[in-house]
Length: 236
Image (tube, rainbow, N blue to C red; front, side, top):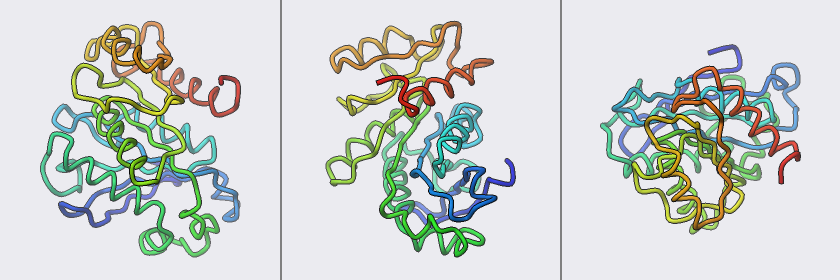
């Protein structure tokens, strides 16, 4: 946590949901900084120690901050100050859907963020693009959220899957063609072959990080670099 991070709780379908909001550095100096968009990031399995403070999740938040996005990391049900109990992805999907709407509503921020009235970007949240990223179990829930938002006419700008849950939980049958899939060569939790089997019919590119395990120990910078290269136009 740092001075750019704000911890808040918002009402959800099963009670309060704890959120960590990470702001781009530029907003500290200039409240009129042109925020590029909003990023919603889903953490790994809560019954296996997953929280919004997971290192991969924090890396995703910081990376999107670097790109000019406001990042939101919710705690799933039963984690931290979030109410409820684990619901195997069903309730978690409902929560993320609610949070995605919350993020796109200016009044949400004005009611929950300190000094929000001084931040020019907040009045435009209903116009800003939304990026979704998920790690492991978070990628499973995220895949279904992407599908549901598309059906509702609220498509995300892009989807990022790290340590994809392919073969462990039933991912959505398809994701957007520009989805960024990042996986560790030595992932001991989700075999790389399972990710290839899921990605192959969709002709999705899988970015394999050599030597990386499921949690990308000492390889977190690789996640950041892959995402930055896509956003900065070095990869089509």
